[in-house]
Length: 93
Image (cartoon, rainbow, N blue to C red; front, side, top):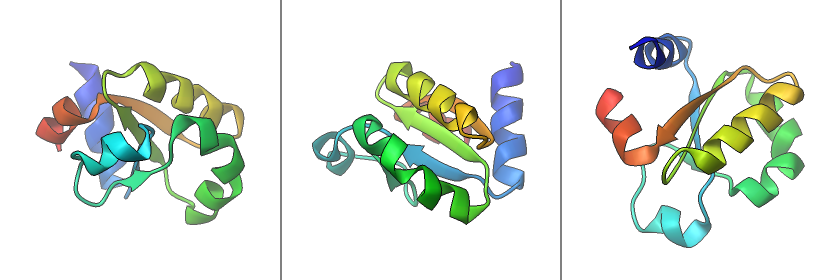
C-alpha cells in the first residue's frame, strides 16, 4: 500500500527511525540504528530532533504510541510518518 511507499521515500531522504517505546522494551529488541526516545520524553527532545534536519519515521510496539509521537513531531514542524509496530516496520526496510 501507500504506507510502505511513503516509508521508502522517507528512507531515501535519509530519515531517522525513532522508537518511542519505553527503554526496557527497546532493549528487548529494536531496529538496528534506530534511536530510542520514549513517547513521554519526545517533547523535550524536539530541538535535538530538529537539529538532525532529517525526516522521522516513528515506531513503537503496535503503532499507537508512534501515532501520537508523529502528531507531536508534525505540530513542531518536523516531517514525520508513523511507521507502526517496529517489527513490521523492520520487514519493510
